[in-house]
Length: 72
Image (cartoon, rainbow, N blue to C red; front, side, top):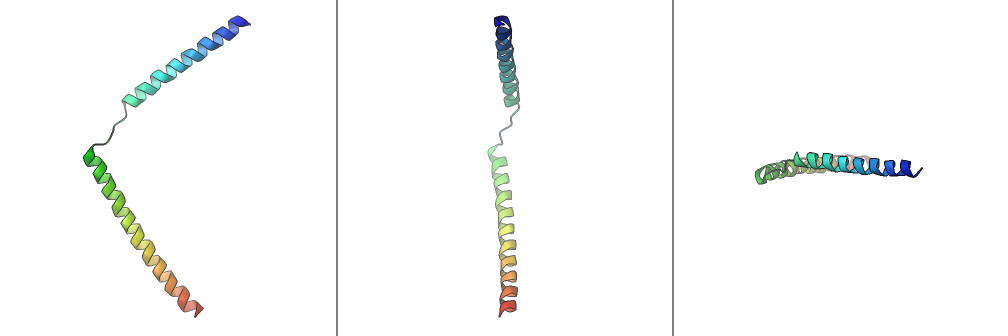
């Protein structure tokens, strides 16, 4: 029984080492964006936020006016 436990511990250790090696290989593939790429992505996000804000503001204004006219 002790031999089986030892083999399981070795198997777990080997799995842990294998996992660590695979994780390191995946981390080496990571591409960090450059400053220019980050700025471009930020501008796209800000522009989209502005469009959604305008859309939601107009929708709120229109629905508010319709509700006000309906209720009065």
